[in-house]
Image (tube, rainbow, N blue to C red; front, side):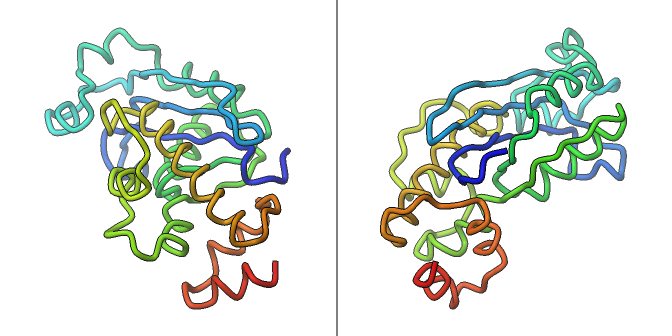
Length: 204
């Protein structure tokens, strides 16, 4: 388990809808492992939820029912993904959404993870105060990060989130005198009100 915030697994789900409690399932997982600020590994897989997805989700994600018909089941893919995560900490953009689906899919197969989750969207709200909003695509443009690909596909979104995260860590390191940003600092930052962020960083 890494204590630095620049070593973790960044993940993104595409899903059949918004709520696993309402029966929605994951249809794609994309993830990148960052170690000491470098991408060292990737994971991407479509997964068949066992029912047809709506035409809205087909259009939104570009994932079709034909593609999913050929994919492995959610259970098989999530078992492989649990192995990929290992005991690393986890990051997602709007993590409450991805965590909901990760928890639901893993509980179906009796697997769990020991890492902790942080949310790049919550952190962005506290440090990118001039950003027009905190959607992933907006922040990528706001930070001038080159992007060539399609948002709303899981691996691309995970890769973009990883780039955004490293850019945000870089900004924070400059604020705290080039010390490493620890996972603990990010957890504190996520719970701090905007007005107290500079105070927290100053005394870190």
